[in-house]
Image (cartoon, rainbow, N blue to C red; front, side):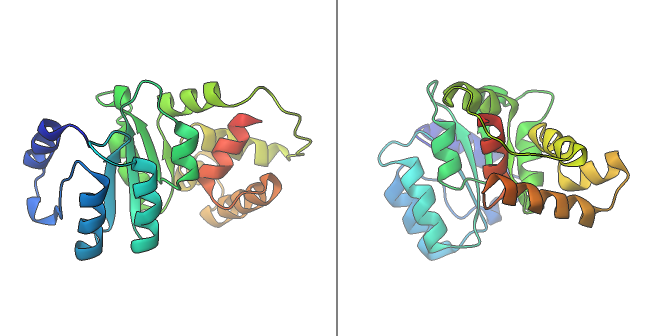
Length: 197
């Protein structure tokens, strides 16, 4: 993050400080830590003192393929689509922090379950930044439409299975078919494409 004070405060709030590999304000420093510490989670903002956050995320994926990434969008004109293209796992708008929906906790839970997450404001920003309505011609069954709607509302696959009274495997199968129909590789791309259409 570009905010040094915020980094210090965040680090002091951690219960398990020994798990913290590093806190940096530049792309170069962050990538150096990634090469030496091989962390499992990169928590970053879209604002750095020097360098580009989106470039950093892309390079982080190359250096540590299994890394999970949460980005907090601090800029008022944040480019949510760019964060999606950079393959960020959880995208949270800074204004959502403190929201009763607990976006940080939900994002971390999604990451722990190898899922993706977009906070409510990040979804709204993405929708506003997307080009106008496009004709899609994608035909969905009622169940696929229902599951897609729940994914758009940030429900996890496990939550969807519980709410619909079907197995997790069935939900995963439907999600796989949805990804195929929309021509995307993962759930965050599915959500982004569905919102655009």
